[in-house]
Length: 147
Image 1 (cartoon, one colour):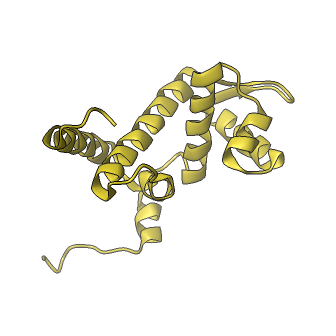
Image 2 (image 1 turned 180 degrees about the vertical axis):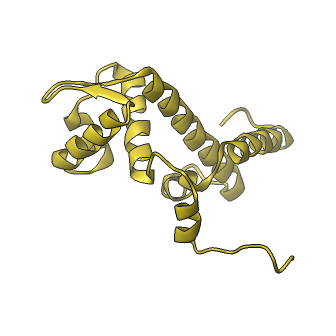
């Protein structure tokens, strides 16, 4: 290893990145997309229930996502995804499914939710794409279908 490689703490790496969405924002946006994809209607109460958080926390986060252009919402109304929010939510769910599929094969398990939630925020798009390819290859080797 080259001694000139720069090492940072996790916080140091995070400070060096230009990230618009926090991990929490990603979780909320992914869940908005999941609910929207399932029923087409997303409300604060839905997010509160699905994410096990207080409605007031959802309201604050939805406002932040609205300010960034990911959702439209009115007080006491439904939450709608913008075009940007839809595209990002779709990717976040895809990323979740890729990591989940890989961990299920790796750990020979049907439930890797906790690990997926802890890991997924730290992977960039290139890594997710390569992990998807590796997972597909592993499935072929095992003779399994898609995850």
